[in-house]
Image (cartoon, rainbow, N blue to C red; front, top):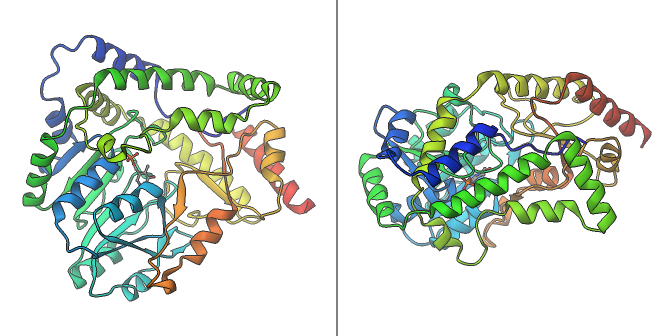
Length: 399
Ligand SMILES: *Cc1c(COP(=O)(O)O)cnc(C)c1O
């Protein structure tokens, strides 16, 4: 069975983490090495995760309480939680399903005197045109934050030069993962200085915890192979356990209680070293193969299904979401035929404050409620991709 997702990391990367944690010698300045490697302009800051960096950023911006953050209507739930924790108000702007980006005119219309920040995410691996947002931010004197957590593309895209802050994630399910970690580029020197100073007061992430994580993901990588995953699904069925719940429990990376304490740590040296390695050795070949596979599926399926973000010209196909009818059993049919399509993800629609019911992001809500994610990674051969697409099309015309 083709698992829904394979963590994007090599066996040797995992081995390196173990080596670096057990033999900690000769690893000075790994964080500044990483930051210089990422950007030659001395504007990068390595963090424990994007969420850690975002929390650090909001803490240092010192915005008036009740200021509004206009944001893409879909993101992981924690982002809105962090905004609220700082006394700010998340205000979603609905997305155009073709690109999963806010329509610039709608974004502009949603600006009020309370608006201080714009936070736009590139979703599903697509890379949206950021220029219209930079113009709006400049015109209204707003801080523009670009969330590239799902859009890592090596050296090909490092954020728009006019964005005030750009965030890339190396979290466990992201492209070129380092099992954690995030890098922010912050263009305001003063702000970056303050963030760096604040972060240096944080405790350093425990190496042993990171080592444990490397061991967990070694196991998950083993389980993610075609035959092992099929076995796992069968065993779970036999034991009457739900494998989705089981896997989700294993990959949860910050505890729900003590959430902010868990976020507020400095990345440990082995994490910085692995981020360096992943960036340095990023394989365009693997990425190209994934893009090719994504294009093939998108092209075959688009006459029959809507693929959110599928209209974008630049796309890394981090995932391939497809909208299906609510009563459709396509996901079940795919699973019966060896494709573990996922019906849920960590992405959620953002709720507007009660005072702004006009900002309810209806298109984003509808889209997320219908979406399934197809397995997509370089190892799946074309003939299997085509079989998957044909299964979907067949099932669509049945209903
Ligand atoms: C994964 C993700 C994040 C958070 O990244 P972490 O490094 O895990 O904190 C933020 N925004 C989006 C859109 C994401 O997909």
